[in-house]
Length: 370
Image (cartoon, rainbow, N blue to C red; front, side):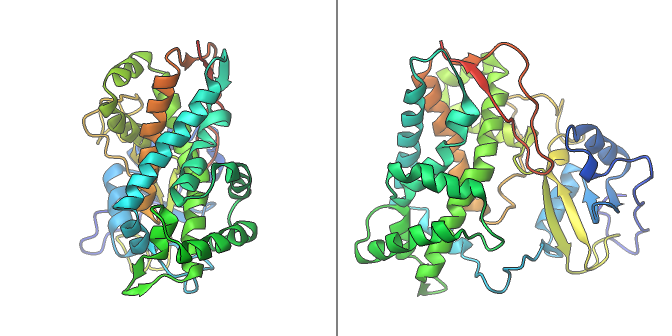
């Protein structure tokens, strides 16, 4: 039974058979479970997890775009306005140029710190730092503040996307940009409108904090998977080194094969096929990207796959702006590494497997630098 088969009165989808592992027990290696779900239980209720699981590519895409399946309400809903359009509009023009320059500058600073060494861990020394440094530079915040902002973001934002110390740090910066706007993203937000009215200081602070939080988490994980996938294929790296315009496709392929977020939850506001109103639906991005019905040899990483069609980022909150920031970070970060470290290659020996139940990425990327 497919979630897209909604005509008439479809039969109730099968519930989880006793022998099937559930999402909560498949953290170490979820791919065998994903394959079983796609082939035998494309729409199934997982009682321990408390959600209907959707695993096939076309079904996941349908679930993420159907208006009957809304983002799961959080405790902040109704109190924190949605400023996605304001953020998206602020990311064009001078702010986009500032963002691109910020990525380049931050990536080359981090890459040059590794130059001359024999080895490094790209997760700890590059991936964990570049997204935060990029977001700070784009917002016009001095580079020397990277360490403490990074610490706040790593500590985690609350259910409203806030951190008290980060908010206190951002508020005076917002006031200064109000008085003396420049060409950075924070200035663009201070002069942006939302529904015809300027954004409040609280809204600007919230947007900037959310952007920093996403950079320090999701984007860092996606960057680690991207570099890990590429370095496993030295010949593909050589091609991209010679033709850097191919990096965007290589990034999309990594998001397909190893998305940073494996599970996106939706809430049924109305009956949707076998899914009753009020139920939670778990859209399995990690399963959808490896659907053999959609992709040839889906477990293989191919930087030059003609149509990777990743579902990550585009269907997340702040998806457009998040995708823009993450894509620039990945493509410019890779260019900085390949330009600055011509001898870059993976270190001998087995790499640690990706970790995490719903957010997955390599915990370390040991590399040789010369």
